[in-house]
Image (cartoon, rainbow, N blue to C red; front, side):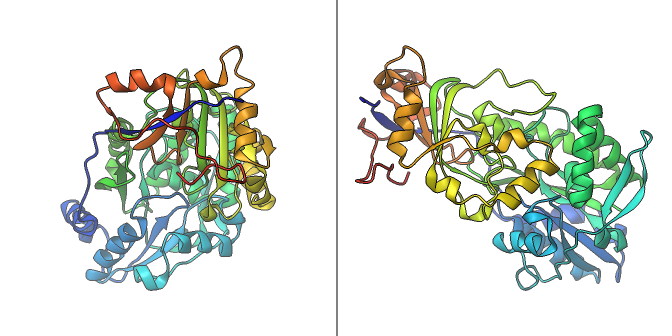
Length: 417
C-alpha cells in the first residue's frame, strides 16, 4: 500500500513561563496572609494527585517549606480517587513516580484508602473525605487547573474536583461518578466541593496552570472563600493556553504514547475530539475519523484507561495492560466503554495500513494524517503531504523538516518521534 509522505512542522503557542515556581508560591502565600490562616503547630494536609502536573514535586516542596517556616506541621496525602490500583501502596508509588517522597519534599506522605463521612449535601449525597485529611487541622488542595476530559463547564479539572474525587478516595470517586449520571458533573463537583469548603477544613488552595509546552505558566494561592470563583477564572486562562491540533478534520491521527501521566483518559479528549462519556455530547471538533495509538507509557504502570478512545493499537501496548488497575479505574469512573481494547496488530505498519483502508474512497497516500508524540506534546508534529500547503499559510505553523516517507524500521515499526 502506498502511504502518505510526512513533513515535520512546528506550532507556535502563546506560552508564558513561570521561571521561579517556589518564589512565586511563597509570594502568593504571603499575598493571602497564609500565616494568619494556619497557626504554628497546626497540621496541614497538602494534596498531591496522579496526573502528570509540571513541576508538581517542586510546588509541593515550596508549600511545605513555607508552612514549616512559621512552625506549621505539613504532610502530603495522595488525592487521586481510585488510581494506583486503589491501594495505599499503589497511590504512594504513583507519587514516587512524580518525585514526591518524604525525603524530596521534606514532609511525611500519609496514604490511606479509608474515608470518613463529613455530612450530606442538600441532595442527600454523602461527603466522603480522606481520613488523614479529615484528621488534620487544615487541608490545602494543590493541583493543576485545566479543561476536563469528560465534560465542559465553568468548573472542570482542578482544586474542586480534587477535593471531591481525589480526597473521596475509591469509595467517594465511585459514588460521585454514579451520581454524575443523575445530577451531572458540575452540580456534583460544586455541591460536594461547596460543602467541604463550608466545613472550614480547607485553609486555602494553590492552583497551577500550564502552557501548551507543559511548563508552569502561573501559580495562584486562593483563600477558601475565594476558591470557587478564582478557579473558574483560572480555567478560562488555562483553556486559552492549551495546546491543540492545527487542523480540525483528519483521516488518521497517530499517537505515539498514551498514559495516565499524559491525561486522566490517557489521551486528552479535548485534543482528539472524542469523550465517549455517558450523557455528554461529543465535541464537534476536531473531527478525526481514525485514531491509532502505538504504546503505553511506563509511568502508567499498566493503567490503559482511555485506550478505547482509539480505533487501532499494537500488540506491545496490549501486552503492557494491567487489567486490575485499568478495570478499577474504568469501573470507579463508570466508563468501561473508554477502556475497551481496539483492533491491535503486531506492527505499526500493519495497523496504519488497516486504518487507512477504512477511511472511504480517499486513497491512503492522499489521506489527511497527523502524527504526534502525545496529546501533551503538540509543539512539533508530522503532517501528511496533502496538509502541507495549508500549513504554509497558517500563521502559527512553521515547516521545519523535509517531506519523506513514514520512517519504519526493519520490523515494521515507526522510529521514535
